[in-house]
Image (cartoon, rainbow, N blue to C red; front, side, top):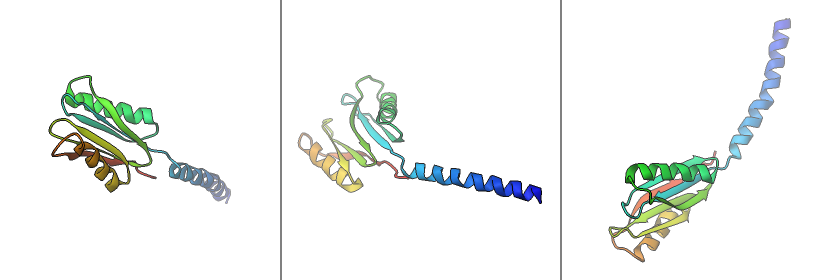
Length: 129
């Protein structure tokens, strides 16, 4: 009987911790970032990072790995949102932040101001847990 009381007490103490952890996860902030190398056309992205800096570093690291150069730059970041990057054959680019579809449309509009045959390279959203 004593073992059952200890077990019940342990469970009762553990439940508030689990609930608190779930509430913390629901309130999480997630950052996204996209990097672009104008000289090579390489891109990179970071998704679902706790800070803007961490998402940007991941995007730059990925872009540099593909480009082999040091000219990768962060073109857009976002918090709990979606971001998109569009590029053209002449390396013109456009980017936007909004809902998934609106970000893509706006990125294509921006890109088409300076280039032709624009296409979406990345469209990513931060997960809301």
